[in-house]
Image (tube, rainbow, N blue to C red; front, side, top):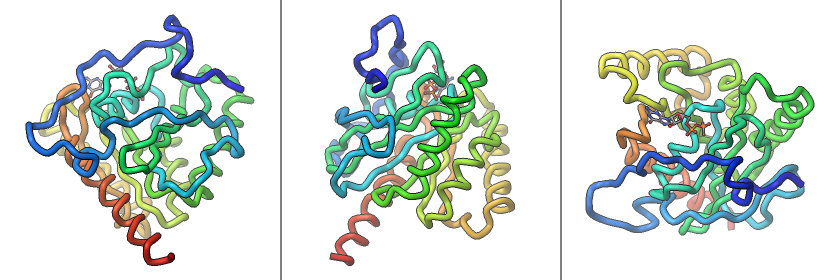
Length: 241
Ligand code: GDP
């Protein structure tokens, strides 16, 4: 059993230090901010470890160092919901957090780190591919991609595994603050075009937006996408009961 991310020694972890972005004063409910007050539930190393019960799940995935942990922390308003390992790519398990609505957040292992041993990479590939394509509770996938280097080969693989299941994906183009606003718009346009060209039959289910954890860009937009998925999931479940 791999060690739980949240109990690893301090020397093996580096907490996200940037301040979680604060939304404007106003409503503070689970509905308005679905990730706020998320609590750690469990870690899954293999299929049989996945949480039982039918709670809908929102998965977060991304290339190692793309800014996934920072995005999660900004959305959760929690400075240390997700951790960053000093040895990126070594964490090959899925961490689950419970949201106040009862839904689960599944924090998938970062991918694309060159130094990961082949056997570990194979394990990641088999586990994550199966999780994305077969997990019935999965309501949607949020993919973090560095706005300066989007749609890498592995990002595309994630979409290839996930999209045939008919569920929605949402791309956060992270670290947008590192781009001038004209370059931000250009990056957004390029990714929209690439998705329309490469994933034509799925394109209507793929959202794309600019995001910055450090400058609080795109937080409300990401929350809206996730809230819509959870509401849709509830409607579908209600209908089938
Ligand atoms: P992860 O490996 O995908 O979880 O990525 P992290 O969230 O750990 O971020 C990787 C690096 O990018 C860290 O040095 C972060 O401080 C930095 N980073 C993350 N988000 C942002 C952002 O919005 N803006 C900037 N400028 N840097 C960021």
